Image (cartoon, rainbow, N blue to C red; front, side, top):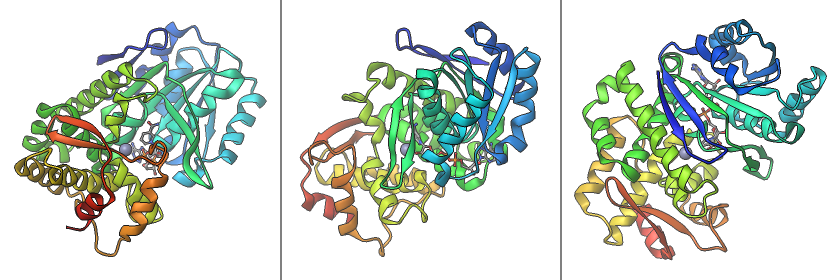
Length: 359
Ligand SMILES: NC(=O)c1ccc[n+]([C@@H]2O[C@H](COP(=O)([O-])OP(=O)(O)OC[C@H]3O[C@@H](n4cnc5c(N)ncnc54)[C@H](O)[C@@H]3O)[C@@H](O)[C@H]2O)c1
Ligand SMILES: [Zn+2]
């Protein structure tokens, strides 16, 4: 087992990575001085796979455990299910020293983190992410939230977890498509921050796709280290943290225009990463061979890279203007200058964006 520290002063916490380590969670909670009453929030899919191991461990460590389940799916990351979580916590008298354990993917992590940040003005949250996306991205960094009918993730808080506990082996039951979508975020870390991670992904593709534990552990740790480093320098996205949005400006717009049904988030980000690299090339910020390498790695992992012809370019453009990350209507792009380094770039003209989307 290995520890990565997210340095955030009094809000610092550890990310533990290991294999077959779910049985260790209960003991890991002991030093936090928690009330005996704690709750796991999860969904039926994940609970049937890993619920018993986590519950047994937590109960064995002496806690009085409540299990709250929410249905499986992004559409349940909403205010109604949040209300259900509060109802359960109150009915079972969880108190100000209680903790919530989020067991599942990013959907579970986001709604549980939000519930923890608001229940009795804020209680501890332990993230136990079981998708690759959640392990390398959503469980670290403290963004929590639920969707509103007028927009995704529109209601939320910054609330850092007290602990992130990752069992790499849980990825063995994940759907292939979900795994690949998570890998898009790992590729992102390589492009924005770490040429060595990028090269590792190129060289070890088969091992990673065959779920080799050591290879997975390496890419998950490295991704968490990068996210931890970025978040500890800019917790609330005043500047640097926005580099994590590489591929996301166009990616989010693609998700919106296609109604969130055609692509998984990581797939849309994969297209976004290639198109934003191409935009960077058009602005003469990056060499063609580097853009080629970015496209090649996306393709080699079976992720989409090209904008499909039937996607409405005007819709993409107007959706980007509405993105909550566009400050005062000025679009900001994270553009690679070479693999391992990006630049925050403002003032890209609509014409350049149109060209990069089309060619
Ligand atoms: N807070 C953040 O910083 C942040 C960052 C990125 C994404 N997100 C959010 O994360 C969410 C997406 O997360 P996700 O991709 O993990 O989706 P998800 O939570 O819906 O999980 C995907 C599917 O995999 C299932 N699953 C989870 N673990 C499994 C396992 N080990 N084996 C088999 N099946 C398993 C889930 O039940 C679900 O059906 C979105 O709501 C997004 O907004 C948040
Ligand atoms: Zn993302």
